[in-house]
Image 1: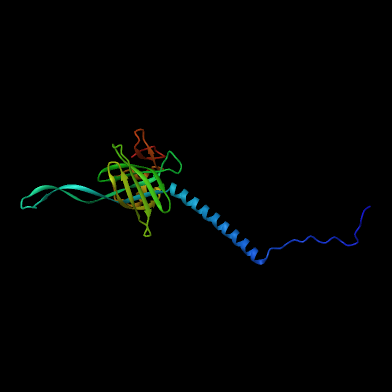
Image 2: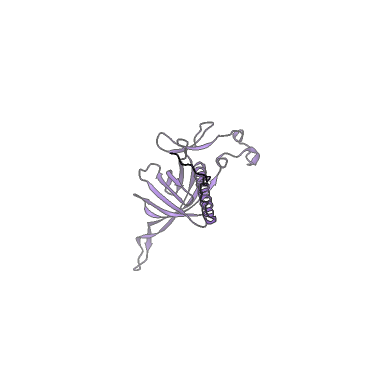
Length: 223
């Protein structure tokens, strides 16, 4: 026996979100979109940093003894004096030709020239290893960016000991490392065709002996 109803079926009830719930959902979606945009911007900024060329200059501070004279007791005699020595270093950091996104470079200071590798650079932190030419020991540097745009940090090495350092990091284009064109007006009348040749893209690459040298893509020249 089949039962029939003379009343039409009731419409299904669909709950509608309250205005406050709608506002919360919209707010969450906006925050998610903002987070995605910030993440994309951070990724792009990190990529640009790995492709950028930088000039670096600063000081490292070191307690170092020196030989001097003392008149203590009335007679002059040789003594060792201990004091703080401030040494200037400068160089360039740029993309390695052998690996995408890898930064390497060269530094020079009163103790000699050095290779810079294992460079890690973010918006607020800079770390790298420095190895002097002809020496096996490694000096590790770690900097934090300050509010004034300078970088302050420390260094540590088996032979050098540890201490403090300051530096500035200036982004430059590859054009800055190229020889200027004749149109710039260098005042060099005997330069011949030196200013007419484009050296190509500037990169750094490790030579067979492990030294990092500057190379050009077009002519394959090294300096």
